[in-house]
Image 1 (cartoon, rainbow, N blue to C red):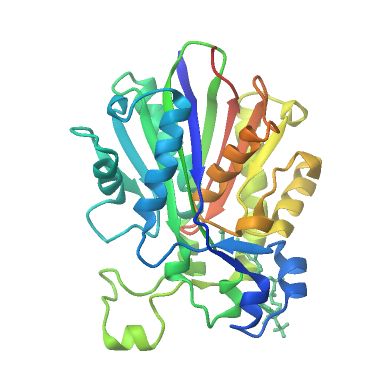
Image 2: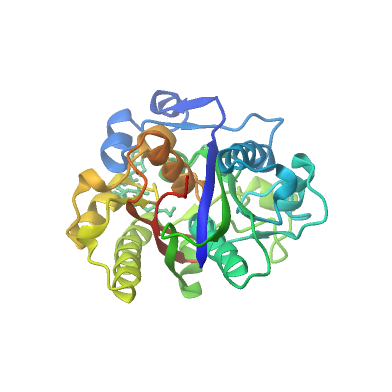
Length: 329
Ligand code: UT7
């Protein structure tokens, strides 16, 4: 008995922000962005919508994909760092949108690693028999914490959402194992300074643009490569699985050069590293979920495949899991 993803869905808003658009906003170029990051465009959430709206749509798709009703969902976990409000949780907003009653709902803050963290929390609740049919949503409006005057960050980020239903499984399909980790001492490499209890909003925090994400890109780059590579190695070694058995790695889509460096470190072919960074940029927690959904829907991941998701983000946090993809007919 284990846990399995029995339904997956994703949703990105329609509005596209291209590199050409960004050239008009900051001192950058299409050439720099594509060669240094691999990103061509990203999606932007409309002004009258929020993370919960994106997450609700992804959740509806995952519920339909699992062949269940919203009322069957027994718990909702939402991974987000751009929730609708400081409180209540975005998971509670999504619950209300879906018309679900009397189930536990909570958010987790693990930044880009949030979807894999969320799946791991769901897996534990399912494995211990307390809950079944757990809805894990990753919903991010990174554009809301992006400083469109800062060229070193604004070219990287986009908005989107993904969702999965995690259920008990008595077949060979499912989440085989997960490795999750964090290192708070590097928290200052990627953060939003103001808006929390340390630095509540004032005129000064707004004037000084302290409600936007601050990032030490090159330090993060180096740590990300090692952390993601090590996470994949650890989860494989613990389960005595050789990397050659992986059909695909679904990596966090922060920078194509990070993904290439991880592939080199693991001696794993780039053709088996799933990529959609060019279309969406970095959607934080939603990135690996959207990538998994696209990999499955485009049949790049097929029934029976051994798949590894790996991510890295603010905290710092990092995580990797291995899944035998598929479900009983
Ligand atoms: O989600 C997980 C967290 N995030 C990450 O993992 C991001 C990790 N870091 C990165 O992806 C890369 O470090 C960046 C894409 C952010 C930056 O790439 P880089 O190759 O590390 O560039 P750099 O920061 O070393 O900057 C190189 C140059 C600098 O100019 P000087 O000082 O050499 O004259 C920057 O000012 O590139 C400049 N630069 C830009 N130029 C044009 C930085 N951003 C831009 C830009 N357009 N958008």
